[in-house]
Amino acid sequence: MMPENNKKKPTSNVKDNILEEALKIFSKFGYQGTSTRMIATAAEVNISALHYYWGDKLSLYQASLIKANKRIHEMHKKVGEKIKSYSLEEKIDISVKLMTDFFLENPEYCSLILNALLIDQTSESEINDEVNESVYKNLSEVVNILHFEIQTSKEQMLELLATTYLFYNLVTGKTYFQRVLSLNDAEYKDYINDITKKRFMSIFGKED
Image (cartoon, rainbow, N blue to C red):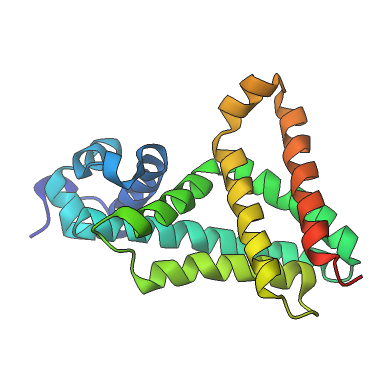
């Protein structure tokens, strides 16, 4: 039976709103630091409504990750279409700038993915295959966008993983790193772009 205070609200709106708020809170406090009560309060619903629509905390967490990764996939698709006819160096330059803009505007996605990598290693609650697939799919998309015509080696994939991990940390830790380096927003964005482009050129330019 649906909670009384949600009867007049469209089901999809309530459910989507809970998920949006959950995504924000999980990205800020991590899986272990987040409670269903925190999410219910942010979404302005009671606990029974949250469980009615999403079940337990892990199910909601995994739905948040899938939603974030779908949005990343949509961004990758747009970037891939935009840079299709360019050279490798131009592809890297344009795509890095577009991806940096996207993630700096949506830093919660980086936080969620970094947290998912930790929880999958340390938590008694395992991330399911659908979530893992959505994370790894986004990594392979970066390879396809930048260098689809050449088979990527295991060494390149490891270097790409390290670069992606660094990139997510630079986005997530923006406030701290800016303060340490005394950089404004524009300078910090340029810093991320420069570091990432150099790493991608090093990884994908080895055969040239």
